Image (cartoon, rainbow, N blue to C red; front, side):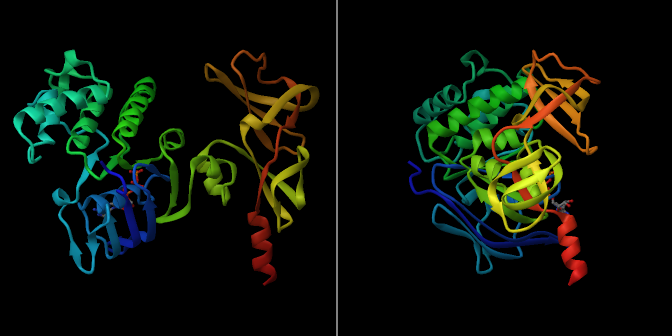
Length: 356
Ligand code: ATP
């Protein structure tokens, strides 16, 4: 089907007027895999997606889809000839068409007979986990999650080489978001389609993607499998974009760092002294004692997030079981499990700049 299909982006830049939005973007997506672009609002994620779709032209660089050049050497293939499916934030379904007709629209110029098209539509309804009883409904008779499944079915209809998903779950509430995400992931896997997903939700990126590309201010900071970035982020910003964590001041020496939580082992030895120590909340455990004080507890259902002030005045976050008996004002001791991350702290960089 789509074996060997892939996206190759090389040296892509884009400015709007004097605003440089993308600055030398390189990205390779192996066929049949999913890559998530994760980054803060306004960093350029949607712009890159729109360039790949062909809705915008880049200022420089090249884009190939499934081995075919679609942008480069002054030439740009129009969106409808790029062999790409696109799902927007809110599915943009045709309001006057029912589910079958919306999905079938994706097959309008598919070179197949009416019977083959009808059977592809039925297959897609099943693929994205839509209730067959809903197939004759119009978009306004569907929930947001069901609408997004229809949008995905339409985008997948012609078996494109590449599917682009632009924050497809951002308009859904928390429970619909997870169930829709699960259905979408299963459909993408079953079709074996190469996918580029844009999101600012790290759990979405980690759940769906084989590869996560962290974008900050129009450049990729780190491109790697999600677990690798979560465990070995290259800087503090990547660490924070992949999930919650507390930052403490520390002094590193080789494989260890000294901070308000004691002498902790480092994930990677540090070639610097003055350090920002980064600790994930699931690494922090709470014990009976009087060294620290709980300043706030957020109850999240399955777990609780506690903010704990250390004698240094610094605050660490701990993730505890939802059933843990802990309240603001409690005195506790705090320990850290496993290795921690350390980054050259801004203080250290500042000192270097001053001494230079
Ligand atoms: P979000 O997560 O909020 O959707 P994003 O990372 O997708 O953000 P983009 O939509 O790519 O960010 O926008 C990046 C920057 O480019 C923003 O500062 C935006 O205002 C600007 N921008 C995007 N499109 C245009 C345009 N057509 N004309 C002018 N500026 C634009």
